[in-house]
Image 1: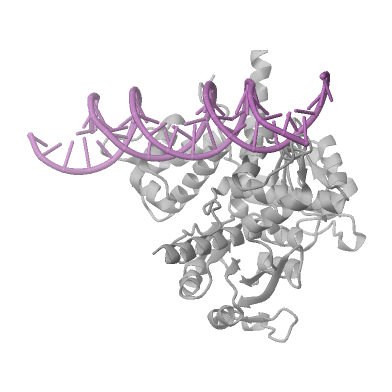
Image 2: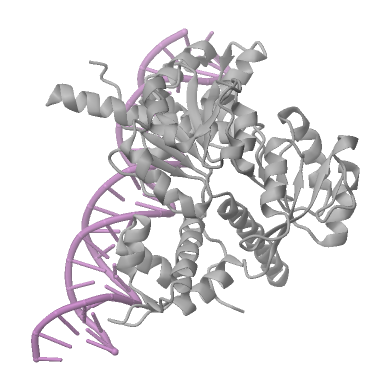
Amino acid sequence: MCAMQLVIPKEAIERLSKYRSVLLRLKALGFVKVFSDNLADAQGLSASQVRKDFALYGMRGMKRGGYLIDDLVERLTAVLGVSGLLKTVVIGCGHIGSALLRTYGGRRQGVSVVAAFDVNPQKLNPSADVPVLDVHELVSFVEREGIRVAILCVPEEAAPGIMEQVRRSHLRGVLNFTAAHLRSDAQCIVHNLDIRMEIEKLFCLVEMVARNSDNAAVAG
Amino acid sequence: MCAMQLVIPKEAIERLSKYRSVLLRLKALGFVKVFSDNLADAQGLSASQVRKDFALYGMRGMKRGGYLIDDLVERLTAVLGVSGLLKTVVIGCGHIGSALLRTYGGRRQGVSVVAAFDVNPQKLNPSADVPVLDVHELVSFVEREGIRVAILCVPEEAAPGIMEQVRRSHLRGVLNFTAAHLRSDAQCIVHNLDIRMEIEKLFCLVEMVARNSDNAAVAG
DNA sequence: TAGATTGTTAATCGATTAACAATC
DNA sequence: TAGATTGTTAATCGATTAACAATC
């Protein structure tokens, strides 16, 4: 029906998602129009890239008049498919899991953690605003509530076992904060987010810059 | 001196970093050798890519004999520049900041959060194992302790102000958990890690797969 | 009109993959 | 030797950028 691009490369998704977030802020500030050039600056891209992205995903501007922010946001929201409230659950109430539960429990910037799960009976609290339930209830809960995405914050050793349950459930996506490298498959997309690794990568970048400027100093 | 590649593209760093982490696990299991093919499988890459990466960053294997894990780990550690303990500080002791402080305070998998900072006097605890200090002490602390990387977990509004201090300090890298889009500059590399955005990206991917299979169903 | 910005094409660039000779 | 795996080259692929005509 809608003859639009169905598969969008991950890198493009990242950019589109950032455009949207920047545009929402601009809108909140009362802005009505933007130029490709502005967005490029804001995001460290080339203006060509921005225009190309927009053209590719069906956002038209006005020659000489830039783009209407409302149009862009509407279109981006449709393309990304993130119009509604993004309801999700947290699995594992350790440090990180609890932090996410507290941050996104209720509702925050379009994301809502509607329940959390743990194996430890002492952590359960089924009557809280955002209930903390036994992991055994995970599968039935997500089915009943139509939840499709979960955030995985269990200890690394527990990850494979949980993933087995997840794959048997109605969940289609997992944001994996565990150090375990999990792989996507036909049933379920896994997005690995290993904080330790991110820290390491940053050290690595810093180290590299330092080495380069040392070298420059020697060379100069 | 060392005629090795000094600048490594971000994507390559990501891969090298993952190789290292997989290899450390293999080593822990008692493995001695690997083939490019195995690593490719484990990481969803092509064997060519693995061999290319290794060749490019000075790791040699044995024709028909694969690669020695010890060699690889040693070389990767050197190339990435992550041999020592990665000492860092947490700025902002909200939900996420505290979680990171608890997870990586002390020392864990090569990372150590050695102090945390906050503006709220009630959160301060200078005598704890991992002290929680007033933000005013940030600059002097990182200078005294030689800390080059910080993890930023303050509320979004506070981010720009903190970044000003950071740029005036000896810090060269910031892992930004804030929703503020911060930009790297000559003084300081910023690595943005917006959890809300990561959740959104995952929903987006899930949505896209769903749409595609709907389409396939129609097409079929 | 002159000036500015989009939309789009062609050129460039870099990264990935395929293929195969070298060699253990 | 036959078989397997690396190391490297050339081919492919895709993404980014430059450039400019269209047009407001």
